[in-house]
Length: 134
Image (cartoon, rainbow, N blue to C red):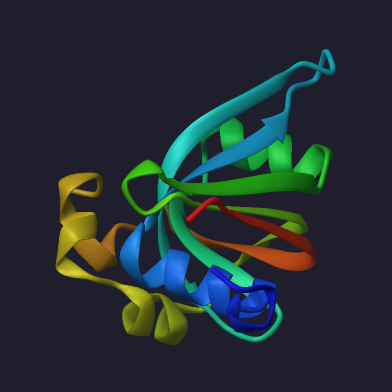
């Protein structure tokens, strides 16, 4: 792909959220070790990625203690890779939770959007990198 026709990092991130959907969220454990786990990205706005999670989980505790996290999207089939560094925060907004909810999330959250332990994990985007090997 010609250099001038490559999508911008924000375009690549938008495409990753739309087409890849599952990202690896990396947090830092208490001992300084890194831990990654797959999460469905529920949304993207200009400044943040949004994830729906149970609030009382190790990943949320880790993100609250060490707010700097990484989110990585990879699509080997499309030779597209996007990495986001950002700052995590827990958000309690039932209306936004309802708006971001999708049926596929029921697979992980059997009680659905009414689960009292659900929260939003907002990742404020600090830096985005992309690789396109096409």
